[in-house]
Length: 129
Picture 1 (cartoon, rainbow, N blue to C red):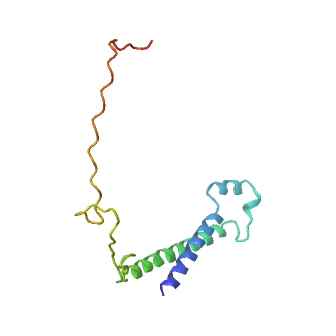
Picture 2: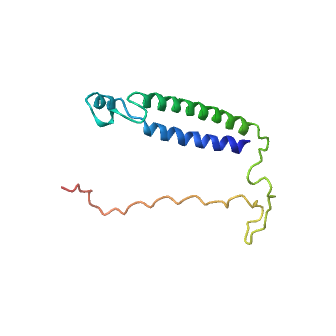
Picture 3: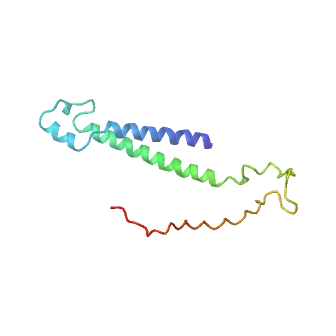
């Protein structure tokens, strides 16, 4: 059932994209008023806007309902195991491991040495000009 809803969802989304691309903007009506060639169409002068807008509204409703259906089905899944739930955790002894250190623990890092002081040349520092 979930696959059927998913297929309807994708078809509705593609249909909405196609219908929106077929519709003309409000600026196209001005060109039709001055005798442009697009005034007479397959659906008539005003019929295409009405048909396409209704079809877009119906597909938008289908898209909304399939979105709710997919949300319902995804929330009903009770299997919440992770990807690594089936794999047992194994620990291996690493050669050269520090005694008393657990396998996942990082080796202690020595503190960084203080930076060396610059050598004093006896001259005052000059500002380049």
